[in-house]
Image (cartoon, rainbow, N blue to C red; front, top):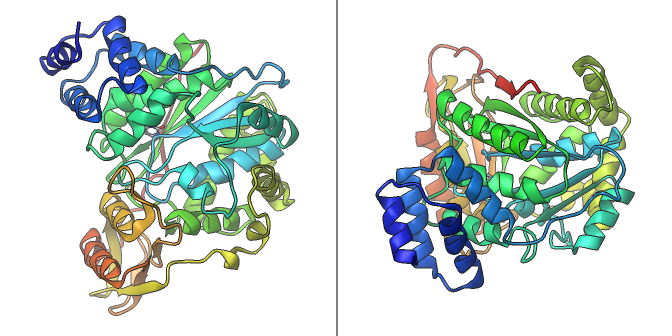
Length: 437
Ligand code: URA
């Protein structure tokens, strides 16, 4: 068995064995298999797909590339939440603190921006001093003391996902069901959580464009979760428009804090409350969704969710003053206001294109070693379904270079369509997938 034979076999659509997958993944983590061969392997998976058994084996092999977190010393049911990625998707920054304020213990391993979507780790790192690479004992201590800690993959926790994730990001191999399922579920296998809530995004800004694809990904991940004994629920949610109004790292933290203050966009708040309520029920802190919703709303109203966020920031070395004064976040200094070419309604928003514009502005990576500009991004002044007048500002774009702003302006003009008729509202949540046990 050798790397070329394995790539060839996958390219020809054959099923790989557990040992072949282990050979490829471990070889890549050790540095014996170079990026160019791993890229070819990932591209062959992208085109040939994987059987359910292969995806489950790939998940296992990736999880086994590092250590397992033992959270047994933390009492109670640990519930984790993970999104498949979208534009403006800052839900983890809101749902985590709400769930922690309602008594859950949240030990979360997140990722960086992937493709044209943002990542929780990059967003948190826009808070000066915030460390997402704390060691295991600090992580466990923070979960115990604060109720919430969020870290990235490390060289000892899911190193395979850490390396493969950043390679997929720059080789156009992100939107593959087996690669997404194994990436997400390998982290869930080792992170010590007991129950998992998955947010599977569906629509033009998601990796899964159709409901059928989103359902397939959701079912695959729910099966993997249940097979490893972790009760897993998936919600398929809309990504045909950016979630909320802000896209970009600092901008998304600011908006998340707005929601924790009881303000912020309605779609984002509603989705976060529903996700948090699902976690509260999964963690047995409430026995009905109605009660869980009241608890989640209460955590925003009484300020306890925001305090949890601030405590997490402090515990991970971040400057807590940013939490209470978001004007301290510095946005990039070049700004262009994008105006509407016509009067009418916003009838469609191509969220993928808007995400690509935000990456180009500096909020994401175009190469593995690209440096993120935390102040770059987009504020959607007008959103799907809203009325606009000709010449009215529909978005603001922020970057360190004016040319990037100009390019983003062109991209947004193409991505946002104005029509005469008010469109029917988008659904926020399409389906909830839970296997009866
Ligand atoms: N989130 C992950 O952790 N991995 C993916 O592949 C997509 C979203």
